Image (cartoon, rainbow, N blue to C red; front, side, top):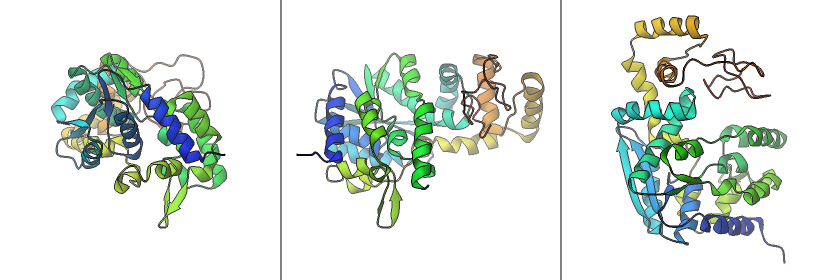
Length: 319
């Protein structure tokens, strides 16, 4: 008797997550679909501590959903609200680890870095993260809203270039990071799965990660299963840093430093937030340098990946 794809996926996730749960295991819980599924599976196999971070003064919608999920699953849950002081403290260490000054990457990774630091203080030795679900199961709206053929092509490209900061951040904290969606058998299953299992409509609204939602729609709260994709920077509230830095840096200083770094380093600074991150990057890493192998980014001189139209170092797109 054939097993439905939803059941196969649920079985694989349960098996994979069970291997991640041991002594001193935690999970970075955003309350989104991906981490809520992993929290559900982890809770079946042992005691797991859930961690959620949110920026002070920001909407940080992740907090509401993470609290809901942790209560539903009976997980012990710790929440850390952090402010600008913690951001300034974390930036040099984070940027030195990642070696980037792309604002989106930094904003997203800040929440992960601070959350892992909190878990490390508790003696957590391994953390479960939700990396890979969006890339493998078409979770991004800029992908699933396209035509069938475009979705296929975009996903194939994404699989070739996808990278995740969690592993390097975990290493810097001395924490083992487990990403069940990136398990080889789950990756293979996802890559062979038809787009009709990844994209679907509910109530006239288009959703990605369709098979994940259907596999767990009777096991998790409805508002979590059908929650729309929220980037980490929005969910944790670090997106407000753009506004903060716009206010903190004067127009005169911005213009002066922008000219300086273009003339001295060949780096084009796009905005005030970009300036702050580049100044930290310049101090802890040094100005970007082309390796001489492959094409250089016209915005910062860093070497680009073959065929890439995105510079991971400065965030320039398209290049």
